[in-house]
Image 1 (cartoon, helix red, strand yellow):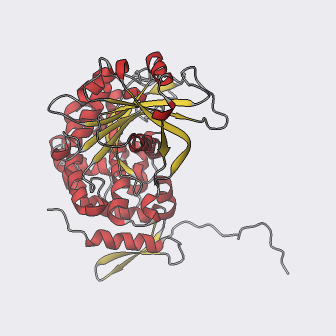
Image 2 (image 1 turned 90 degrees about the vertical axis):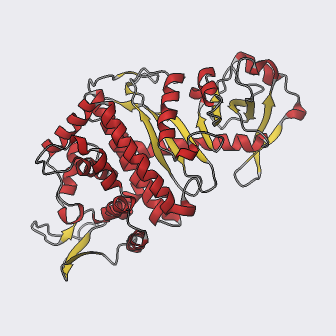
Image 3 (image 1 turned 135 degrees about the vertical axis):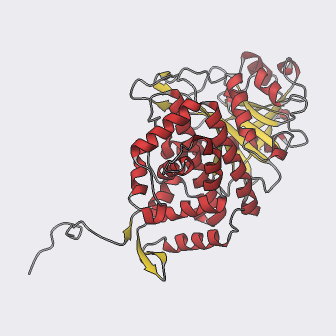
Length: 458
């Protein structure tokens, strides 16, 4: 009789396995690329940078790196895991070829960035049509959240500098389209900035908004149907005036810093003017009230701007600031939306916190660090990160339902993309057979069926 030692079975390890595909669940991203037409759009956009007699298409190379990032990679060399599975991902360029393309696109500067962004905008509109009722603009409104993110640098990279948090790195400003409570979000802008870039820089917010609007269908590039939300970094006179400019007429909901003038105005608000804040379900938010300010605090700001303040009991352990009043935490935001109760407007602005989830997902998808040295190269890397995030947002929108539709990148990788499969060739056609005992095989196969049912591009 032998005694069992340890908690896990002892398995002998051997090399030389055949007909087994690692990261087979990545076929979901491949099919998303195909149905969205992203491969043809990127290839056409980068055609000017394809050299004569080149073996690999520049668009395919860029998409391969984006797929690798979507599967969890964080550098150019991680495209090697796609190269190991040509049956699923096709021929993948070597590491030197990938590096040369990034250098070529970086040298082209704004021209290459514009080409990639134009292709993404073209495909984004097609994906919205394919998504139908699952599209983020199905309600007739698009919400774009702008927020900054600190990316640490552990080596001396171009434009890396000390940040406001006393770290060292870069301070990109990003924009995300909010998919609402029933979805995730997709990136529409990524403006690379030095680490010491200011949080309240109006020019950067305007540029990021312009990049975001360029990714939206034309009908959403102006007018009240597009809402721009920011934290207090966007609460500057120049940025708000730009949003409300005649002919642009964008809706906005921007956080405001509690100045001494606003603080004094809050102290003068009578008790009867405070309205209980609400939760998403419509119930009263315990210990929170909202009120609208007027008078001198609006002097110098664009016409039609409303200033709404919330007071709330601080969370346990939270420290009050000098601008708080009567032991209650004060927050303030400005909007130009009319004919809506201030409690609903405050709830809408509070939902801007979902941008923090988008940033967390971006950090887990290639934005944990900028792997290249030059700023021009890292701008291309940011476009690759956005391509990966696009795919991770489009896949749930087009093919997943229920709880899987809300899964974040880390969970998608662990449960779906990392699944292995057996490669079987029958009647000259290749099939992937996923393990029947894998708990999420039905999610993978159902998603593939939904993608197959979508019309092909063109």
